[in-house]
Image 1 (cartoon, helix red, strand yellow):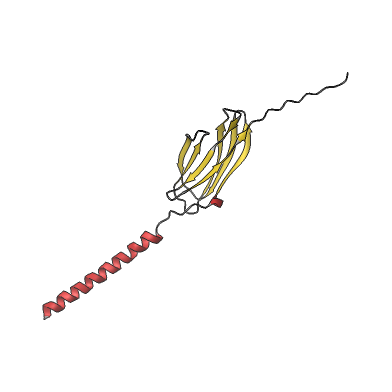
Image 2 (cartoon, rainbow, N blue to C red):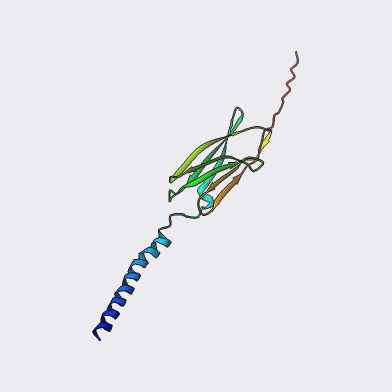
Amino acid sequence: MKSNYVVKTLAAVAVAVVFTVSNPLASLANDGNKNANLKDDQVSVQYVGTNENQVVFHVEFENPTAEKFWLIIKNDAGDVVYRKQFSGAHFSKSIFVQKEDTEIRPTFIIRNSNNEVVRKFAVSNVVTENTVVTKL
């Protein structure tokens, strides 16, 4: 009878240890995940102007979890022309895109491990000619 009591006690202790150990691990699996879904209002891409043969954009990303993310820029054909990984809570960078044609369509992507925010632009270069006639 004593051996049954010892076996039941050891089984109860083993079950208690399993629950104690697995509970914090489950908590870490759910709450310990720093990766958060990106929200549209966390990303700002603004046209700044032109600089010789380049178009200048300013990219900002509020990243409160400071997790790693990618800044990806694609050209008109969808080819990746820039791809770099960053981290930090407050990202701010000026981006210079080469003007090769009279119209370019850059796409800016901020991507973390869960999802991405995309900003697309069409930039047209319009040259106007002014003719001034003065009477002499």
